[in-house]
Length: 113
Image (cartoon, rainbow, N blue to C red; front, side, top):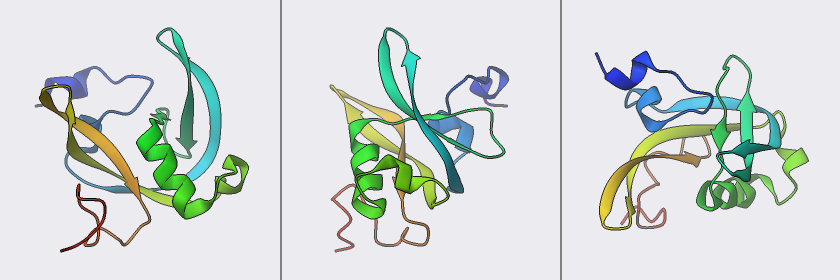
């Protein structure tokens, strides 16, 4: 058993996805206090957890669904676990994409080649 599964938090972590992508329907995007900062948090039906949007994920969603977050409500995205570089370390991360584009996505900017 993954120890992180024993301590669910207010916000989803890559480990919560257990290696599997998940298609979600966006229910809301609100600014919430995360630590000492105010950050955008995306929420969807059927989950108590939210996804804290970093700039990368926010811009990926905006590229697909538009700049106005109110236009995102009711639209589907896929969240998936991956890894990213944070300083000198490789760490677990959640990324977003349009459902059905898994074969086109990569850390090289979406170019499949």
